[in-house]
Amino acid sequence: MPSLDPERQSRILVTGANGFIGNHIIKLLLEKTQHQVHAVVRTPEKSLALQKVHGHSPRLTVHIVPDITAPDAFVQPAQLCHAIVHLASPFIASSSNIEEDLLIPSIRGVQAICHAADANETVKRLVYCSSFAAVFNPAPEGSSPSKVYTEEDWNPTTYDQAKNAPALIYAYQASKAFAEQEAWNLSKEQNRWDMVSLCPGVVFGPPVEGTISTVTELGQSNGIIWGLFDQETVPETKVPVWTSVASLAEANISALTTPDAGGERFLLVNGSYENQELCDLIRASNVNHTTKDRLPKGDPGHRTHELWRADGSKAAQYLSFSQPTLEETILPLKDYLLRLEADKAGIPSQNSKSSVPSSATLMGLGSFASACKAAATKCPVADVSVIAHEGTPVGREEVHDGVNLYITGNASGTAVLYLTDVFGINLTQNRLLADSFGRAGFLTVAPDLFNGTPSPMDLNEPGFNITDFLAKHGPEATDPLIDVAVKYLKGTPGVSKIGVTGYCFGGRYAFRYVAAGKGGDAAFAAHPSLLEDAEISAIAGPVAVAAAETDSSMPPERRHNITALLGQTGKPYNVALYSGTEHGFGVRANVSDPEQKYGKESAFFQAVRWFENWV
Image (cartoon, rainbow, N blue to C red; front, side, top):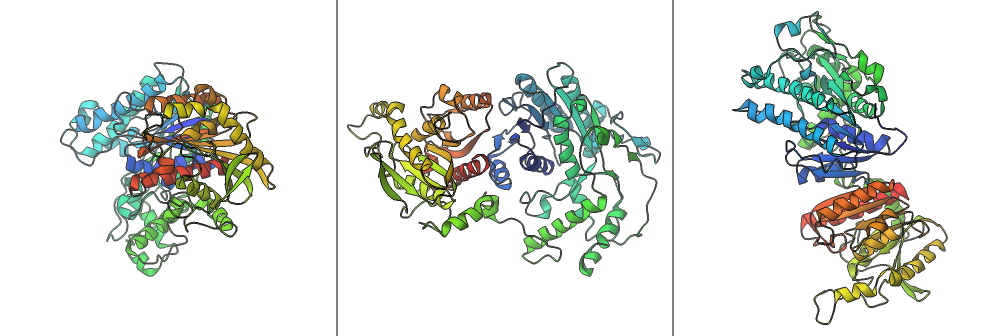
């Protein structure tokens, strides 16, 4: 069946990306594989949060899909993707119309993701994360002590029973079965892509750091653990089968690349548990007496032995994933929850072994902090931050082969060739941004692309014609100037690789100078203009693009076209869209506007991370 080749870089679409499970899957994809990850979230705020949590990885592209039930909701995000991991599903806390609020949206969401797989010929596999709720029989016989659930079992609730359910939980459980059954039906209507479904139990484990800030943000599964605290008696165990979030994330990724998994359904359960067992484990761990007393003692060591079970042996046979014990899963989660509670209250946690990442780490600074620290001792700074928005430029100007070069930073293996917008190297913002690359540890060289006569700041200035200006400064005039800067960098002792970064006008040349024989090893382009299809197709190295939400030079259609062309090159690529930004934001953002400031800084971090990964 059409699984992915684990040795090749592929593009994976992950829906429900900002959730508990989604964040773990994305973290694992970014850390343990070479795949490009396209993530779907529902709001711009969740997009920003997801990018922060994952350090603005150059291999992570985020798509905002407000309505996951719309027929074409996932068609564009799935463009050029090779596989889909589908996690997104409707969830409601209350309803006056279960059918309209829950049942229909659950089915339509599945129809939308299957339509996206149908509409994109590159998609070969859909990994569908279902739920044990789709397996469980809520009738009394379903909870018989002798019952052992397998992949052959399905929640038998009918649509009419769910629509008229006396409690929302029964309708929710049934909706999981209806949705998974619809996915199987649609997958069998064609033979180009196949499907794997995973049905986990109650999913336990620490959330990815930075994804939640208070215990009130916990999902239902981990909420079971926190719900044991400050109780007088041990709560009744409702669903006695559990799954480690680490196992589930690994199984999802294994399902992408395991040929024999195609067309199979798996119960993914690590074992059975009881709430008494959870209390025993936590009370016996390294907690102080105060914390221990917050958990009900109950009847230590007592086990009911009258609970149904689930057989997860099929998943273990087909898929590759770790199988931590209940203790190995619950105790780190306990430590995380207590630390989260303590951090919120502003007091030290007696179980804390590490702190929640700082805002700097979450914004992507952590990965190159050591480089910045080292660079700071060699290169004077205009500001204490890595990226300066104002101040006095600290670089120097030198003329080489008749071309004026702005040079900043010190040689340290990888250098940056900085190609400006039409306002040239005399624009303070260009110099400050070049200095920022210098502080990030790169020798940075920006050639004067206009021989001392850039465009005026006011493009409507009387007597200035932008069309004539651009015609005068085409590739035949501009390439020789850039060649001088490349020659300078290659002749500098200590420089072995070159990352090319370009803005607006210069963005086009970032593409040109990562073509074979041009000197660049990887490129980053912010809101490139005048870029030709042939220049995209000719790249010989990885390319990242930062796109503005509003950009007449790169409207959505052109952005999608650029993305498609990049995908056809076979080279690593990343296209990031920044909300609230306009053409030119990578250099000339209004930093008094928080959204524009975030966009400019994030684009800078995107470039730095790109060069760290690919140069």
